[in-house]
Amino acid sequence: GQNIDQPTEMTATEGAIVQINCTYQTSGFNGLFWYQQHAGEAPTFLSYNVLDGLEEKGRFSSFLSRSKGYSYLLLKELQMKDSASYLCAVMDSNYQLIWGAGTKLIIKP
Amino acid sequence: GAVVSQHPSWVICKSGTSVKIECRSLDFQATTMFWYRQFPKQSLMLMATSNEGSKATYEQGVEKDKFLINHASLTLSTLTVTSAHPEDSSFYICSASDSDYNEQFFGPGTRLTVL
Image (tube, rainbow over all chains, first blue to last red; front, top):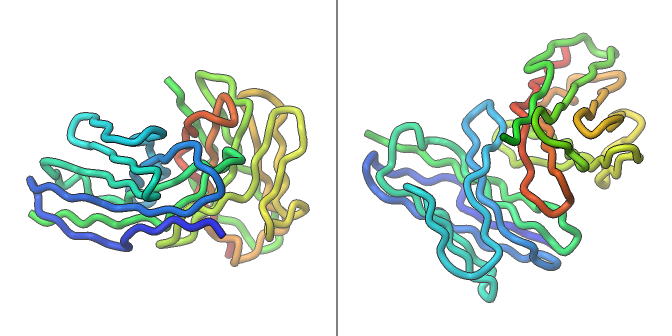
């Protein structure tokens, strides 16, 4: 079966750095997406990785290792507004997105 | 660019009535639109995928006669929840893509409450 695993909840301090991990087992791979979702709102796109390595975009970076079926989202200089759920999604061989359950990130002052 | 709108944002209806939700791509042509449902504290669940001008492809366990999807144009898809019941209360989100392989752009979602 297809499976995406990510921690249910994480807590971090404002100004700090946090890494949210995602491991996956899917039938085929056509890229991995990270989305941010604030409570009661729809997801917004953060990053897309299809090749191994680190993609940096401002305070957010995303890493992918296809051989390990592993990705992480790194958030630096955390701000209170970063409190949200972070969804990992993998596009399989049928170009269908397989979604993780999301990681709720709580930022404390 | 790549803005997707949904209407209404929220709706409350009586059990047994039907509710239509619209999803529009405002600045691009969406060849593919996706409808998701999300229950509290759970991840997105894909309900169906629709391509303009053809019948939607429903995920296993989703009743196509209850959740009617119409993708009549490259900028509009509608989801009609027929004979809604309280268990249909959920957050319904659409997304749109200009191909099967590209990023999905999400609408703001519609919160449906069935009394």
